[in-house]
Length: 177
Image 1 (tube, rainbow, N blue to C red):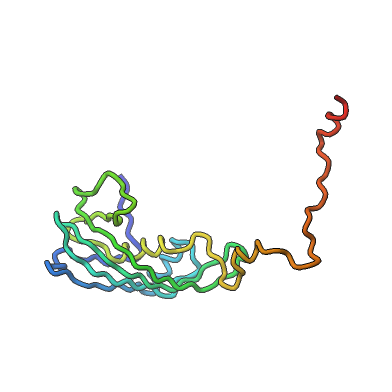
Image 2 (image 1 turned 90 degrees about the horizontal axis):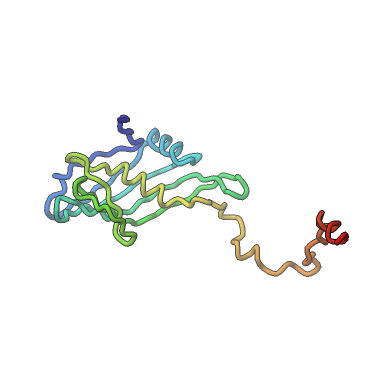
């Protein structure tokens, strides 16, 4: 069996600290943690990463987490290869659930379930996962025109026809028949 992976940004939080009325918590990644996360996500840099949680108890020892992720990241445009800054503000809802109560069926409309390991949840890793989900997998520099602009009519005088096609190499066979 392999050793468990240590998250780059870990903030263990005791489930017992939530209490029956719930509790708010905030986590912020330090410089070294942001550098490690940037490497994990294939980003040039993560300038800031902060996440606020409202934790509330649910039945069966589970917790509901309503959160807001705020981050500034450097991304690389998939078209130009240029770096640019992107601001991420992403609300989310998660459920921290005892490992024994994890649902085997996936409900795409239900909040994501994260297992409670022992008596703690990891708010740092939860924030990192939300950042990964919020990132555009095909980032485009904000100065590029929208794709709608690329499909507009060409300006007057621009070539509108495709160049003539080269004859097929099989055309000779067609003439012989």
